Amino acid sequence: MLEAQRLEAAAHAVFPCILNTVAVFMKKDPIVLGVDVVEGSLRMGTPIATVKKNPVTGEMEPVVLGRVTSIQLNHKNIPIAKKGSPSVAIKIEGSNQPMYGRHLDEKDVLYSQISRVTIDTLKKFYRDEVAKEDWHLLLNLKKVFNVL
Image (cartoon, rainbow, N blue to C red):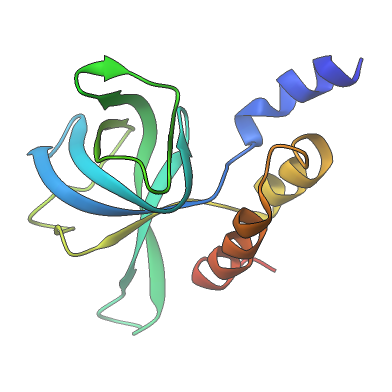
């Protein structure tokens, strides 16, 4: 029964990661990037966002790119890219995507987009799979996305 609940909650489980863009292969629909995993682990289905300053209000706001639908290393699909692994190519798909060069640039740091629901899901169902340093990363991401 617990395994069934865990599979049901898998869509809400977002493992924390921070990415740096190395190359931009496609700027829009879908976005295809070469990235380095700076912190955490990047998994399939992870929602990716960056944080930009709103020119009107001056507050930091998330810019959602979409979900990771493909991770490739040397033209081979892999399920997880971890910190310290070689650069990987990722495909990000989503509706109403921002465009690289116009809304984003290569200097922007990319984050896995977390919320209170994703943190609670990790605590309840995936506590054993999240490394200790990833819990610290979650605390940092809570500040980035203003999660209470």
